[in-house]
Length: 145
Image 1 (tube, rainbow, N blue to C red):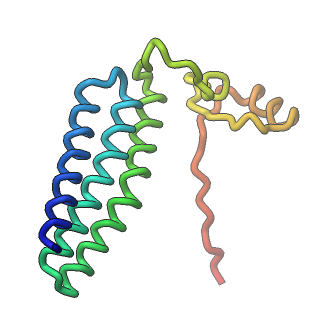
Image 2: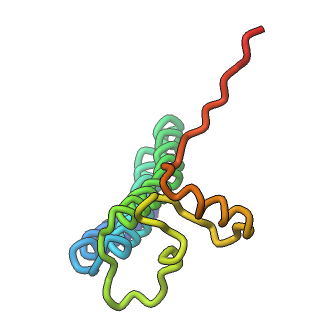
């Protein structure tokens, strides 16, 4: 019985990974390709790790499989978000049939500033006055005692 569960999990895992690969090849732009590879790939790896846990049925293997699953589920969406954001800001073209672009009025490509849309009029006025200033990273220093 457990062998059938392992076979079903591995088959489903391989189908999801194949779906991710086909999505990367067939989808039209960076954002949709990343969506396919992240979602289907993470689910495929998760199912594969569960199958490995059932196959070996050892506490060490189960712990390592759980660690891999948690690592994939935490890092894959974050990495996809970072790559998508960088691609958008660099100017990678989106698909021509994209319906909604919520960042188009919030991102200034000259100063590389991203507005949230919730700024007050005072904040917008300060921004308009300081268009020539580049964004800075604020570093707080510990004061010497």
